[in-house]
Image (cartoon, rainbow, N blue to C red; front, side, top):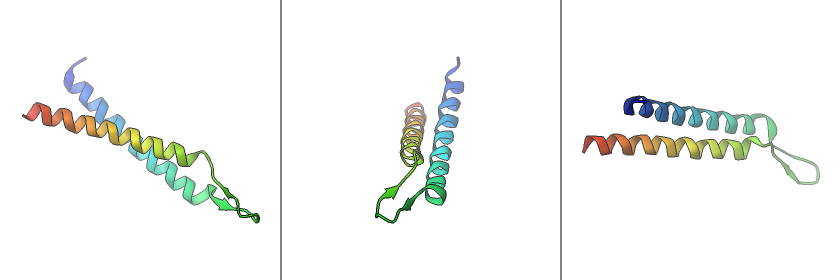
Length: 73
């Protein structure tokens, strides 16, 4: 597999995870978060999934940028 093709896969994977993370957090805030009459906060699995997706996407984009800068210099 060529180096350029691998870089594109890292870029697209990073963008996919960022988009998924934003979507999961939007779904969490829109539909699944509420406080019941006893004062307990009820949340779905979308909050940790969204945060994890954002972290993975950010790391992949950071790796992509580092590789591009390393190639440039």
